[in-house]
Amino acid sequence: MTWGTAASATLHCLTGCAIGEVLGMVIATALGWHNLPSILLAVALAFVFGYALTMRGLIRAGLTWRSALRLALAADTVSILIMEIIDNGVMLIVPGAMDTGLATLLFWSALAFSLLVAFVITTPINKWIIGRGKGHAVIHAYHH
Image 1 (cartoon, rainbow, N blue to C red):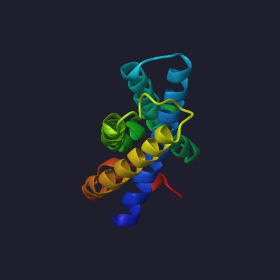
Image 2: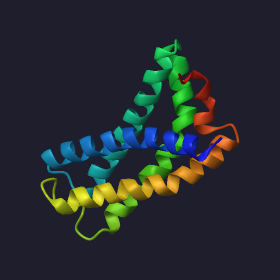
Image 3: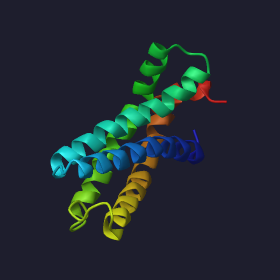
């Protein structure tokens, strides 16, 4: 597999992660939650949206919901896990990023930076995984 395939697979996972991260942070902020429950919700939603994006394409390709879920779990789990560790780690080490609130440039800049770092680090890992017939390689036949 090529770097382009790995970058595309990583961007696909990153999209689901970003949707989940932002939604989780918005909900947690609205509820007045502290860092740990905010991160846990954001991570859970990142997995939900990451898997959902993959499943959407697989179901459109004619797979059953159960088969699509199995393939999404096989294709995305490692990638999403790595991305979540990296982007949440970056958010935690940027001074004030988690405490500043959603209405600040610091929060959104740190989040954008954390997602960029996650993409850069996860792409070569995905290339290695795909090259071994795992990760997004298991769903490549279903892409049109």
